[in-house]
Image 1 (spheres, rainbow, N blue to C red):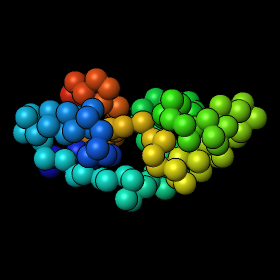
Image 2 (image 1 turned 60 degrees about the horizontal axis):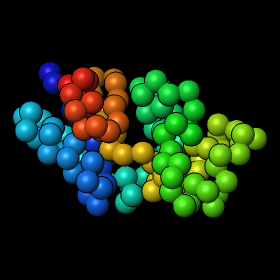
Image 3 (image 1 turned 180 degrees about the vertical axis):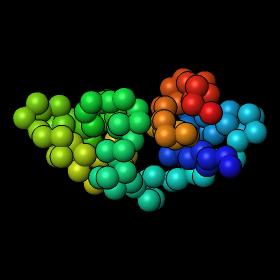
Length: 118
């Protein structure tokens, strides 16, 4: 029984496209989650953070996005729940792509990093 590989994908992102192509080159046909259309909920984000070995949702955010600055997400007074909710409400802030396999996850930056968990 092989576990399904999942990629949180944004087709407009070059790294996301490269990572998806790399998976296919290695014979993997992943479940593709278009996270901008179907954003992960808070529970899913918390699982992803754990699988990625991250201690804060802030680590999973694209801090260079204008939206990150507009929402003042660098504010240290924000709770972890508020940060996770910001990602739920604004999936554009999610670092991408994220590949999940065998209970682990990797961000495809660089794309080759995802091969570690296949």
